[in-house]
Length: 66
Image (cartoon, rainbow, N blue to C red; front, side, top):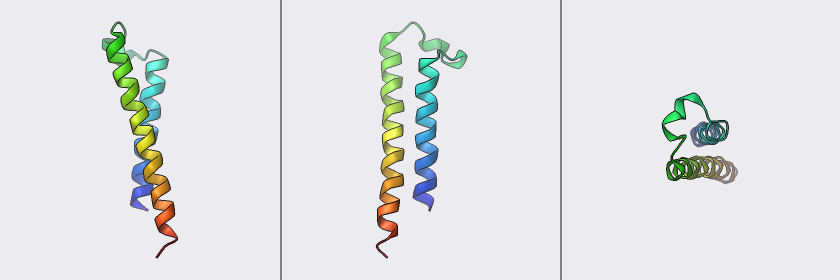
């Protein structure tokens, strides 16, 4: 249960980060002119979404094997 909750939180945070980069959010104004920084933040967001997915699916797989 805890892995599922952590996975959801991390995945949603990564998705919000990616969406913020796409819509040029005000709080990411420091990265608006730097292409490398935006790509780095995008990779971090993708990594967070991936890790969240892995946490959720791993907790579902281990839940049936008690």
